[in-house]
Length: 435
Ligand code: SAH
Ligand code: SF4
Ligand code: F3S
Image 1 (cartoon, helix red, strand yellow):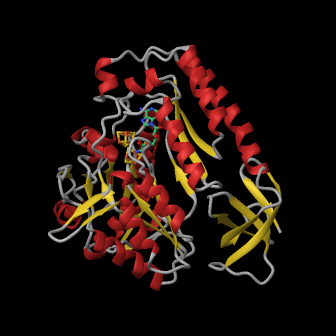
Image 2 (tube, rainbow, N blue to C red):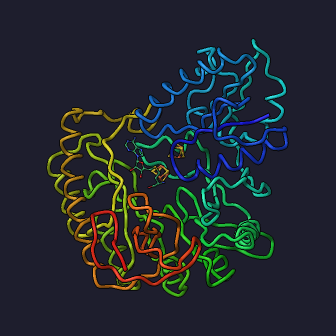
């Protein structure tokens, strides 16, 4: 039997899909990348914005065609949208299985219990599930870069965000199991691990004899091997500590890139968002990062048109982006999510057209800033990890610099997995062209 899984949403979902494949193996399912030959079709879903869910509804129709054409094929929705909508997904009668992010261990049992008129569901959230003992079935293309979840859930209550509802309370995974997993992938030839959590800076694991915080975990993973690169996401501006920044600076192989979502440049709005930091606090953290790691890559997330956002608030966002100069940003129009604090207590009062106008201004500014940031690299030497052929020009190779900028360069004698030092000679707003 074969399982096919489409993955939507964040990197954590990519890793969850790898955990699901590992659990499905126990139920006798191998992995396929072709929906047409699958006995089990799953979508690992995201609820973060309404358009993310709309896309899944479209996919359910496509899966339904498979289900009709090939009797016996099972269709399931797992992940955040499963958790959010629960039996509403079963009401469609197009889905045999609904499983939330903390219930993947029950997949074999649920699959065995499904009958044509008895779909199965498990959406229980857990206080301690971290899947620590499950070795994910890696799905990355080149056996080079592995995601490792170090925690699950989120204890923040950002007023716009569904994640605390779909993923439950924050819990940190056993530090030893994380280090073991990183060692294991390194021994299998991997050259890069990315430690994942909604707020990695609040990682905290305790046993009877030791307490490990995020800086401590970073140092332990970095100590595995000098040629194993360590990345991580996502950092929270309120929690990123000097100790974390110092640990990055102290280890050559911890990549010099921080994804630090700002959301807004207006302190008034940050308060309404319940982000628990101010514009000034954010700028101070950026100054600290740049003083300890001068060439640190910095990327962010921005939301345009959150509840009650005025033109002045919007200008604050633009001016903060101008001041910081991010390398890259994920930029979104605010999407009202049922059940969140904002949804229950604030009016979604910026009209859609105005949200998009502001979003476009933000995108335009960021494109200009990205180009500036990439241009500033021209003439520098950077170390890249060779990932494979460049998408645009297969005669060239591509790979990321420590600061996460994508580089393309002539192949020479290099092969996938090599480290190379290249010189930046030109750029676009998203690629460094190197020699
Ligand atoms: N844990 C991370 C972000 C997780 S969600 C953090 O705290 O920053 C990824 C991004 O989606 C967020 O940073 C935010 O910019 C965006 N986002 C979350 N909820 C949203 C909503 N309701 N509308 C628009 N964008 C949203
Ligand atoms: Fe959502 Fe805030 Fe948690 Fe990030 S920190 S996942 S934005 S609630
Ligand atoms: Fe989406 Fe869930 Fe990740 S809502 S962003 S898949 S935690």
